[in-house]
Image (cartoon, rainbow, N blue to C red; front, side, top):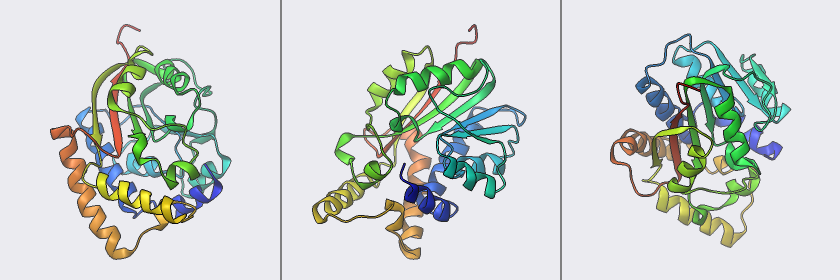
Length: 246
């Protein structure tokens, strides 16, 4: 990602509607998995620490983060997350079977060989361990954020499931979310492209009132998406498990 994306993310992630809503969703999914508090976590593509914040608030302490950009790691350390290292998702410096849970949220779309990154997730998981994988959906939503974040692709649910399962992981659930804002985001990105508007990150398009409105909308969205499995959404969430006999 461009440096400006990390700078904006670091300044807004604590209160921005998108980050807060995602943390609500991820925390709910982890509670559903009934993970013990001493479980070992790896957060791949940890960015400036949004997931680390969520895991700390949920009571998990045995957490490691990895990001390919030293700038992101420095932001994490400045925020008190010290177990964060610089590293590549396609060759992470961890042993086979080291982690109970791996998070890769808005990560593999940045990687040329996303299947290799998924194979590494499989490798570092303990037998029976689970991965939470989140990616952006639908090529038609390609916009400013994809460009500044250096995305390689956006996904469809079936394609993501197939790619995950080709690594030996078994998909337990997969669904679209951020479906209520799908049309507004599509339109906003279309207008942004037509007008040639440039920003360091889409997170800069915000205000206090707008942030609160979008948070209410997104909070309802992330509570309902796992129940109704909408046919579209801005993002996809998958939970996958490594074979217990591996």
